[in-house]
Image 1 (cartoon, rainbow, N blue to C red):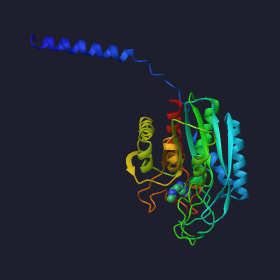
Image 2 (image 1 turned 90 degrees about the vertical axis):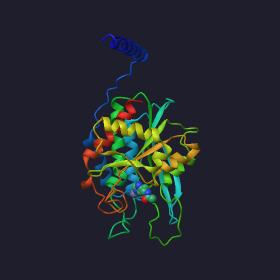
Image 3 (image 1 turned 45 degrees about the horizontal axis):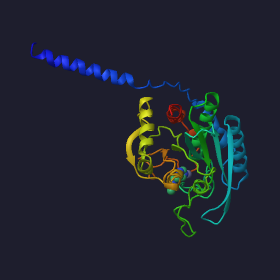
Image 4 (image 1 turned 135 degrees about the horizontal axis):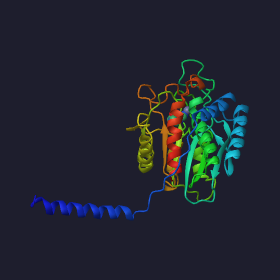
Length: 324
Ligand code: AHN
Ligand code: ZN
């Protein structure tokens, strides 16, 4: 005991010293995060699907665009429409609209949340009717549905940080693998490519961005996609840790997978990474594309949308935003 006493004394003093160090730090504010409503998100997807396929230059696309603008105008402080005529791989000139809806547009500290709202004009991954457009409940509808529900929540309780919700157009008019046209590089993501070269505000800046793509599949899992790991590792860690803390560790896997050419690639590529952006996109190791199993087929339908997946993604991203 006589030998141990000085050691115990040193330990006690050391732990007291540590405690006072901890006390000196400002108390971390606790933010009440509202509950993301997956029924509402689902309804926002159903509403889009009801317009029919949202293929650029179609009347369904036009009508859905008008609905999205009106809805975001109800929830957000400002909505900017970025119109562009974009030439696709087949020579068609697509009348496209990037829809940019903001909360606290004057705030310097901001985050960017995005998805694409157009749907694919072909079902080139299907066995039949490869040349007719898909419904795009998951591919197009789900990301937008989750973001509209988040906008509704933000309108009820405003986050401290400024938020920009960007719905990109002309993402999914990319050249099919079997195509008679000459190969065109960068044929996907035309809307986000345009935005990256023509920012909706000069010198636009956000602390980081989160892209949602195919976030409504049943039993979907989200892995750490290659470009997200490369361009925005800290953002990825933050989001995946929050998901795990909320109990969504089964959906958000700490596993790195191959890079995917998606809107975030072009966002990350502009102006030396002004907005480091991750992609939350389903990874299905058992499908041959490694995407959602109904990807670019006529089975990408509302009936395969799962509210549990919408909830996991929506609640996680809401936690990220409200704690910023
Ligand atoms: C490619 O197919 C090259 N990239 C996937 C981007 C995408 C299409 N996401 C949804 N649809
Ligand atoms: Zn697609």
